[in-house]
Image (cartoon, rainbow, N blue to C red; front, top):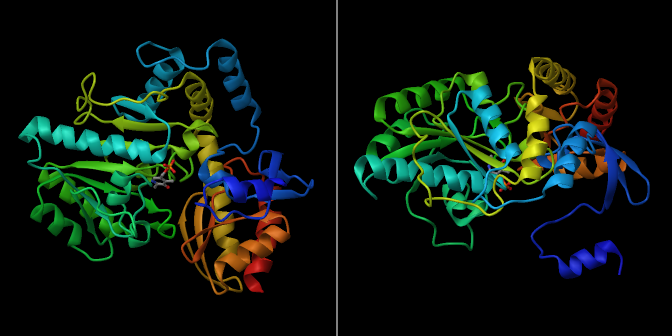
Length: 388
Ligand SMILES: *Cc1c(COP(=O)(O)O)cnc(C)c1O
């Protein structure tokens, strides 16, 4: 059997994969098993911040592999401590819990908010977390319970109690839900990624600030997809003037290795005590060494480049043939198109450009260091596919 057949026979059928077997690449260029080259506008879904085989990341990871690949969390290791220090220094958050994925970083945030409330008011007095309609927070049972999209719920009930979903499009809905429920937290994405690359409306951002300030609830911002430079700032909440109590991230932070982080601010920093939460692999020294190499290079110069490339894509696609609207922030963009998104994806792929979808839209999440030359070439192919 070839790899396609082996995978279809033996790998659980949770994915509908593209008929492409990737074997390598460099930066925003990926290569398949037949030697065909692609310009990558997906970054392994916002993971490969500096593209494939980034040399500085590789050096950091292989140096750590040569020393020690894993230690249990019963011992101290340097990359974990240094990465936590770097994240706190860059965000003003106070403590970091490390895990291995976005879903786990959100699980930790949910547990932290509930325990914060339990220490303050008693267990189960204020357990409810208000999340948003159309949100996506992960695939575990707690995080699909948090997720406000029915398509992720079907066939998996019963769900974890303690989540209600407010409609960000209805003014006052969030405020009403926070007031009517025994709440400990509000949980949001600054741009709903899986929900269709939808940024929060400015008035809704103001409603979030007000409701959190007035109701003694925590603000949890899920930066799993928007985080780590993608928005043109280190974290997208920084573009919106939000002051979260808990920030979760994963995807890009490890540069390609599994790594999740839940950052706890001043109010939430003591939510956990020894034994209340944990992870065998969380804070793995190799993943954290990779994370250090990524976060250290996310600076103002890089963010300026992200904003510039974003503006270029928006300029090229807005009003282009077959394009109804372009939404998003930084290098996280959604294109509402006249054609079926999956047909656009297939035509782009045939012409050597890899793009993603989000609901009915085309979604672009290119590596942040994609060159203007690569971007121009890819946008040309994309425009042709959109116009067909
Ligand atoms: C991808 C994503 C998750 C889940 O991350 P996993 O690493 O797949 O568990 C959670 N929240 C958001 C906003 C995401 O984009």
